[in-house]
Amino acid sequence: MFIGHFALGFAAKKINPTPSLGTYFLAVQFLDLLWPTLLLLHVEKVEITGKKGLPLNFISYPISHSLAMVLLWGLLFSVLYWLFKKETKSAIVLGLCVVSHWVLDLIVHIPDLPLYPGKSPLFGLGLWKSITASLIVELLLFVSGIFLYLTATKASNKAGSIGFWSLAIFLLVIHIANMFGAPPSNVKAIAWAGQLQWLFVIWAYWIDRNRHTADTSIAVNPKKAAIT
Ligand SMILES: [Zn+2]
Image (cartoon, rainbow, N blue to C red):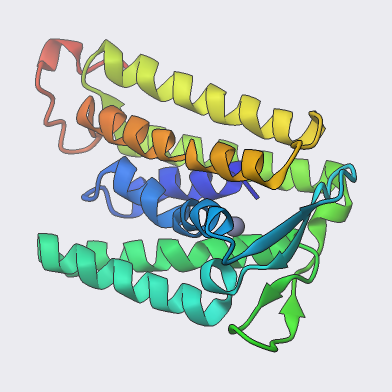
C-alpha cells in the first residue's frame, strides 16, 4: 500500500485540522519511513522477486511492521506529540494514524505481517494478488482522502494550491510507476528510494503553511482565500 496511507493523512485533516499535514504524513507513513533505515542497517530483510503486483518478498520486518511494535510506535508518537503540543485529541488521532498503517498493509500484503518480533504467525489478506483490485482500492482511498482534505482546507495563496495538486499528482505517478514499472535492481535502491519519502513529509509541511482550515477561514490574505 502506498497512496492509501497518504490518503488517510489527507483525510485526517477533516477529523482534526490542528496538526500539520506534514505531521499526519509522518504518522501514517511512520513504519515505511523507518523501514528503509532498518534495511540499510541490515536489521530487516526484503528480497526482490520481480513478480508483477508482488515484486517484493518481505522476509523479516519485526521492528517496523509487527503489530506489537506498531502499537508501541503509535503510543510513542502520541506521547511525543503531547509533550511538545499538550494537545490530547491530536495526540490520540496521530497515534491511531501510525497504527492505521498496519491495518491498511494487512489488507494488501500476502501473509508476511507478524504480530510480534520473534516466531510469530504471519498475517495478510493478500489483495495484492489482484493488481486490478488493489489499484481500485488504493485509488478509491486516495480520491476519498483528497476529497475530504479539500473540504477541510482551502489554499491561502497560489503556493497552497499548486503545492497541493502537484504533490497529489506526484504521489499518483509514483504509485503507478511502482505497480507497472520495472522492479528495483537491488535492496539498497529500494532503501534509498524509501528514504526519499521524507521529501513528501517536508512537502506536506510546506503545503500546510500555505493553506488554512476551511470553516475558520484564517487566511493570511483574505482576497486570495478563494483559491482552492
Ligand atoms: Zn508498510
